[in-house]
Length: 140
Image (cartoon, rainbow, N blue to C red; front, side, top):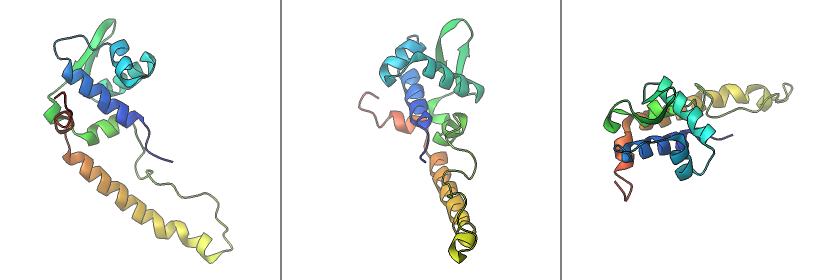
């Protein structure tokens, strides 16, 4: 019912990679910070690579940002890891009673509002860069 944690973990991954420009950002090292399995990190890093946000090479340990943190928006990260599908942040319950005047019409009344709310959230994410997040951290 809520946004996948993939989004927050992906931001964590990218922030770590940026903070470790001179080192090797391996999935094991990142997993230690995220406190998860390296397989999870590799899966998300693959998604970020496919979206052009990180560079990884098969058989070579480590990842690096594909572009400046200032040029990566939270919306790009959000979409890269499929946090939610288009117009599906909010779900409508299935099978309301079609004999009830509210049940029969509730989806038509609330789905447009849900869609607008998701778009508003995505507009905010488009305006925030990874660099802005990095600079909010005490280690930045």
